[in-house]
Length: 422
Image: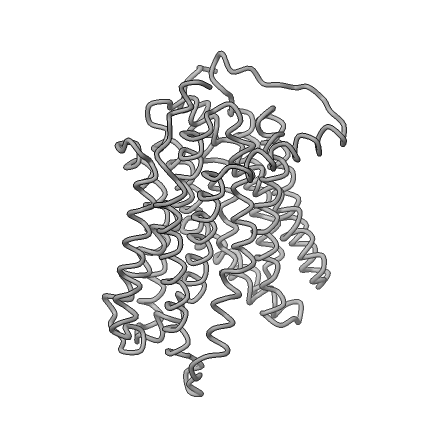
């Protein structure tokens, strides 16, 4: 096997991220799960929130494992993600909501966290001069997974009379092969030797505590964590209402579906484009300033014109495209921004700690938007839509974007290029 950065880093990263990124296909089959097992859709939705929560927390807890041995971490990701997919299929056949929470939320979530982290440092080591481009390429795979997998999953749903269990079995097998090939190919460049030292539970928690203290006692890290959290929280709040907003502004189901694919592509393009663009700036944090300024501008314009209530299609679509692009760009720039400030030596552990923001945002973003829509405005009895409620969500996200911009300007100063010392 050639020692090539594309074979040893880029391809395995895409194989891993294009597999685990299908967690965002949840909307494709969530109603079918609820219908088959006889549960309310709102109860089933918690499985997705748990998956995102365990993604972030497993990344925080297992960041040091990834740091020491990417082969072990990528294998853990493959096993957990596959077991989660297949187990979810079995749980659906058993009509057990608690088992769906366990397999889709917890076990698959652990596979998501370790799988997300595993290729990141390896990419930055192989692509030292274009770290943003490299990590953006992989994380774009995570964003594109939804666009790629959704029609495949829909095909299997139709094939088996909307019983999602068999879709989970088949897709679980496909992703097992993809992720295992990625696991076999993934390798750090010569000179970066993996550490296979063994330690017990006591050593594990001691290291975890040390990483937590190191990260959260640093003002810059706290600033990056807050920026990252707000960007995800606001992104999820608006993305979760995207379909309803498209219907409210008068778009047909076919047009809304097409625009859903456009926003998914914008998410992936933001991951690749913003991170590659960041490579050209002396201060990578400039990208976050741009994301927040653009998000504030379009959100404020939609608020001032009552764009959703007045059905200003161009403005609402532009806002959702920007939110998706900024959401993706925020993800892809975090590891490289952290490496600029903290060096490459412990980037996986620090990045893992930062992904705890994703875990918490996964529990708060959708729920905030749902609460505002349910408790403000008025639902149209004919359409079931709440134009004023969706409009009110923008007041909360705009205020939070402003807070994020202030944090970005005040707490996160230009880095001193510590990667040169690592």
